[in-house]
Length: 127
Image (cartoon, rainbow, N blue to C red):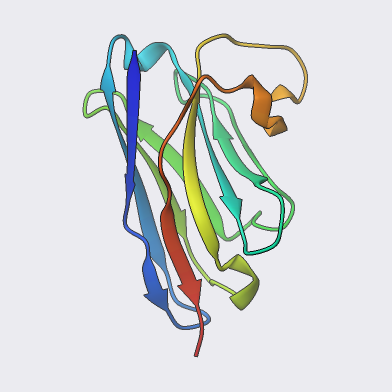
């Protein structure tokens, strides 16, 4: 019932910033917890950040803490990922994901907990 479309990726120099957007369409967007994952070439898709359905709870992978900020605007059906101080190791395809049901513990790091995925947007950090 939900379609996700990411945008905002591109080529940026180390130390630069990008803001990714995930536009959602479908029913009851505000009831979905949302996350960002990323996948670099030859690597497994990894968790980046999570935000609860109401926006009151967020979590980040250790690798991006202090540099990335997740937010959501339910009125606009959009989730954002502000990425600052970008590093070459941030290079990856970034995916938006939506989970219908709230779970207990650190479930948000598990790929199989999400019901919907976008097609991804490429981020390249290089000089």
